[in-house]
Image (cartoon, rainbow, N blue to C red; front, side, top):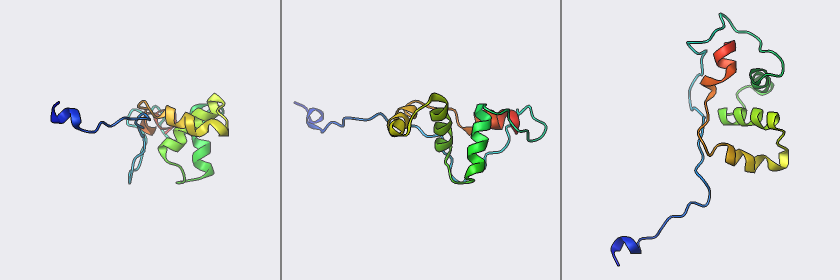
Length: 107
Protein backbone atom coordinates (compact mmCIF):
# COMPACT_ATOMS: atom_id res chain seq x y z
CA UNK A 1 0.00 0.00 0.00
CA UNK A 2 1.17 3.47 -0.80
CA UNK A 3 0.67 6.63 1.22
CA UNK A 4 -1.87 7.74 -1.37
CA UNK A 5 -3.94 4.60 -0.82
CA UNK A 6 -4.20 5.43 2.87
CA UNK A 7 -5.26 9.05 2.33
CA UNK A 8 -8.90 9.80 3.20
CA UNK A 9 -11.21 10.04 0.26
CA UNK A 10 -13.73 12.83 -0.19
CA UNK A 11 -17.12 11.75 -1.43
CA UNK A 12 -19.40 14.41 -2.87
CA UNK A 13 -22.92 13.50 -1.82
CA UNK A 14 -24.39 16.52 -3.54
CA UNK A 15 -23.29 18.05 -6.81
CA UNK A 16 -21.54 21.37 -6.64
CA UNK A 17 -23.68 24.42 -7.12
CA UNK A 18 -23.04 27.07 -9.76
CA UNK A 19 -24.06 30.69 -9.19
CA UNK A 20 -24.91 33.64 -11.41
CA UNK A 21 -24.61 36.13 -8.56
CA UNK A 22 -22.43 39.20 -8.81
CA UNK A 23 -21.18 41.07 -5.77
CA UNK A 24 -20.78 44.88 -5.71
CA UNK A 25 -21.63 45.06 -9.42
CA UNK A 26 -24.01 47.10 -11.52
CA UNK A 27 -25.62 45.24 -14.40
CA UNK A 28 -26.02 47.76 -17.19
CA UNK A 29 -27.79 47.60 -20.53
CA UNK A 30 -26.01 45.19 -22.86
CA UNK A 31 -23.91 46.83 -25.56
CA UNK A 32 -25.71 44.79 -28.21
CA UNK A 33 -29.19 45.63 -26.88
CA UNK A 34 -31.73 46.34 -29.65
CA UNK A 35 -33.63 48.93 -27.60
CA UNK A 36 -32.80 52.61 -28.06
CA UNK A 37 -34.29 53.32 -24.63
CA UNK A 38 -35.90 51.30 -21.85
CA UNK A 39 -39.00 49.48 -23.08
CA UNK A 40 -41.72 47.59 -21.22
CA UNK A 41 -41.65 43.90 -22.13
CA UNK A 42 -44.79 42.19 -23.38
CA UNK A 43 -46.87 40.69 -20.54
CA UNK A 44 -46.22 37.03 -19.84
CA UNK A 45 -42.70 36.96 -21.26
CA UNK A 46 -39.62 36.02 -19.25
CA UNK A 47 -38.52 39.65 -19.37
CA UNK A 48 -41.89 40.82 -18.00
CA UNK A 49 -41.75 38.32 -15.16
CA UNK A 50 -38.21 39.38 -14.26
CA UNK A 51 -39.20 43.05 -14.30
CA UNK A 52 -42.27 42.36 -12.14
CA UNK A 53 -40.14 40.56 -9.54
CA UNK A 54 -37.52 43.30 -9.53
CA UNK A 55 -40.12 46.03 -9.13
CA UNK A 56 -41.96 44.19 -6.35
CA UNK A 57 -38.86 44.06 -4.14
CA UNK A 58 -36.00 46.27 -5.37
CA UNK A 59 -32.53 45.10 -4.25
CA UNK A 60 -34.05 42.19 -2.32
CA UNK A 61 -33.26 39.32 -4.71
CA UNK A 62 -30.01 37.91 -5.96
CA UNK A 63 -29.55 37.02 -9.60
CA UNK A 64 -29.97 33.36 -8.65
CA UNK A 65 -33.22 34.17 -6.83
CA UNK A 66 -34.60 36.01 -9.84
CA UNK A 67 -33.62 33.43 -12.45
CA UNK A 68 -34.90 30.50 -10.41
CA UNK A 69 -38.16 32.19 -9.42
CA UNK A 70 -39.02 32.84 -13.07
CA UNK A 71 -38.06 29.26 -13.95
CA UNK A 72 -40.18 27.90 -11.08
CA UNK A 73 -43.22 29.96 -12.06
CA UNK A 74 -42.98 29.00 -15.72
CA UNK A 75 -42.47 25.34 -14.86
CA UNK A 76 -45.23 25.19 -12.23
CA UNK A 77 -42.89 24.16 -9.42
CA UNK A 78 -44.76 24.29 -6.12
CA UNK A 79 -43.48 25.66 -2.83
CA UNK A 80 -42.92 22.16 -1.43
CA UNK A 81 -40.51 21.20 -4.22
CA UNK A 82 -38.66 24.51 -4.54
CA UNK A 83 -35.58 23.75 -2.45
CA UNK A 84 -34.77 20.47 -4.21
CA UNK A 85 -35.55 21.93 -7.63
CA UNK A 86 -33.38 24.98 -6.98
CA UNK A 87 -30.47 22.75 -6.00
CA UNK A 88 -30.77 20.73 -9.20
CA UNK A 89 -31.36 23.90 -11.29
CA UNK A 90 -27.96 25.33 -10.34
CA UNK A 91 -25.95 22.12 -10.78
CA UNK A 92 -25.16 23.09 -14.36
CA UNK A 93 -23.98 26.56 -15.40
CA UNK A 94 -26.71 29.07 -16.23
CA UNK A 95 -26.65 32.27 -18.24
CA UNK A 96 -26.46 35.32 -16.00
CA UNK A 97 -28.63 38.44 -16.10
CA UNK A 98 -26.38 39.99 -18.71
CA UNK A 99 -27.82 37.43 -21.14
CA UNK A 100 -31.40 37.91 -19.91
CA UNK A 101 -34.07 39.09 -22.36
CA UNK A 102 -34.82 41.94 -19.96
CA UNK A 103 -31.31 43.35 -20.34
CA UNK A 104 -30.56 42.25 -23.93
CA UNK A 105 -33.84 43.26 -25.57
CA UNK A 106 -35.53 45.85 -23.37
CA UNK A 107 -32.72 47.90 -21.90
